[in-house]
Length: 244
Image 1: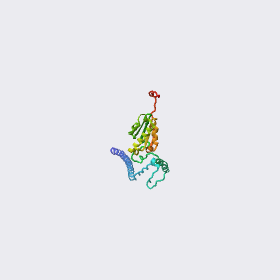
Image 2 (image 1 turned 180 degrees about the vertical axis):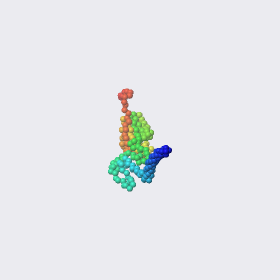
Image 3 (image 1 turned 60 degrees about the vertical axis):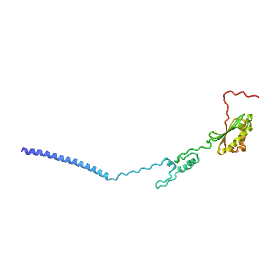
Image 4 (image 1 turned 180 degrees about the horizontal axis):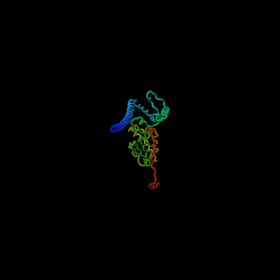
């Protein structure tokens, strides 16, 4: 009688344990399956969904110059609208640049050119007249100070005290002009500077010749008159004046 009771009592807990185990494993498997199925569905939805639309890049904003001066070309099918600032700049800025002497060729991409010197900056020929109480010297030089002709009253035959007179200086200036005309220098001389030095009688004589018909060849080409007389300042004591 004892054996069947033990087997009966032993079989009951085993059945209960098996039922609880089956119920637990079924619930876990069901939960796992539901979770995996949900994940698979999400993955499938993500694959079948439309790809994300790429947002086209925004057009670049107009540059500062285009905003000020306006664009001359139409973008796409749109026609360029007139810009009030563009018309204002064309009326004021560009007209001022056209009237000014500013070289704007570099801005347009043109090759650099050597700046041309103005006429005032070009060195002219020189006509030097150095006269003192004993003699008169006349020298004509090139712009680089190379002498063309240099003569004094003694070269044309005046001697001693006659070399410092008005007549000798007058004759000397006429002779120098004749020599320049004979050698063809007036054609080459376009600009001439008259340089006076000293206060002898030859100073007025040279000016008289240039103002006369003989000096018409060079008178129209004189652009400057300068005085290079030396002024005594300090130094040693002067000699005693001569008394007669």
